[in-house]
Length: 214
Image (cartoon, rainbow, N blue to C red; front, side, top):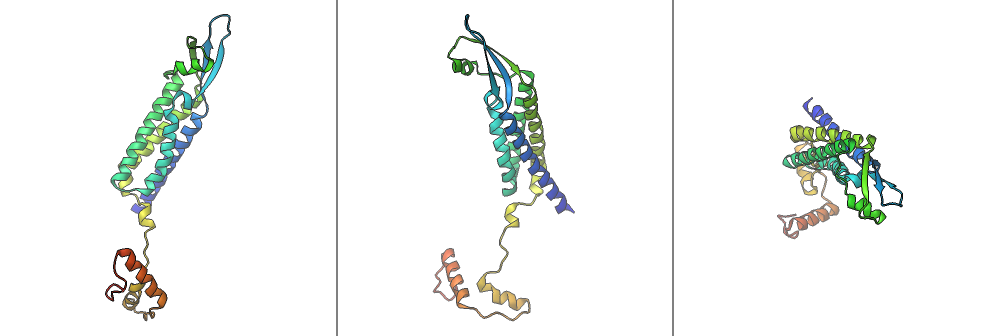
């Protein structure tokens, strides 16, 4: 029962990281602000649209981090998993803060970059937020924070990929003894078995010509 509960929690955390990362990247590629550039007369005003990646560059970075964390949570264990959980929580917090500022018009837009794009460094720039996509980043941040806290608080108890995929086979030189303990007749050692045993001895740094090694 405990193992099944741990696996469910691990699945929820993985899905949370992946979902938050996907939502963040989707939001970063969409318009976040309508920018109006008022130029000196007689030039007419011009309009620009800033995406989430332009208005809040950390949104894209946090999205990529969350997607990578979905893999890292499986690959590590113990303290390493807690560290990943802390990073996920921080990334979620940054996403939520960026989304909130984007939805309320509180982003600090780099006016110089916008005006340089039209070649007029003294133009006046005003920005109107596009509320829908920043809210998606805010939602991604909330999901990321919850997933990160779940990893920090419960991650030490979850299974790791290393344990699942560890080799459990019996080395060739130990098969006869294992078969004897199991009550089965030992299979005669073949040239293939001796060849594999010699290579394994070399891998360990032993001398394969030594009878005690092979």
